[in-house]
Image (cartoon, rainbow, N blue to C red; front, side, top):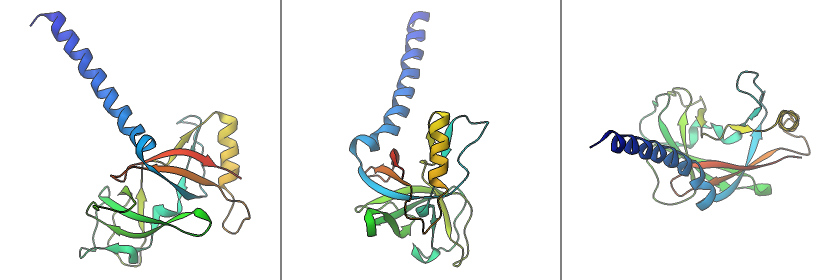
Length: 176
């Protein structure tokens, strides 16, 4: 092969990698079912990462009693599957957690953000939908809406598209 062929192959390979990453992130938005998740209050801005809102979800801290499995030790970064059901007010909540990918049902694929080994300790899970990029003014507005505490009349919610494999993509925010 000539240098031109190698150069063209390298360019095609790089474009293929970029296209795969892009399609992987938007696939749930195109094919997934939308669920409404309650956003938990956090400090959503960072001067180092730019204008974005960091989001935490009530389904990110799951009661240990919902874990199904004989092994009561899980490593940080381990993949888990969290089944969700629609509850009161159209808000979805976790109903059970397992290590094996389910064959059916609506579930979120996540990774443990810390090791877990005790029944009384909740499972801390990240789903890859914890950041919402926005202009500075909008990020401040999101920060104010998310800081509302449980019991407040108006709450902030995230509308998340979930694919059949459990991958989630943040579709939009429903702010008060």
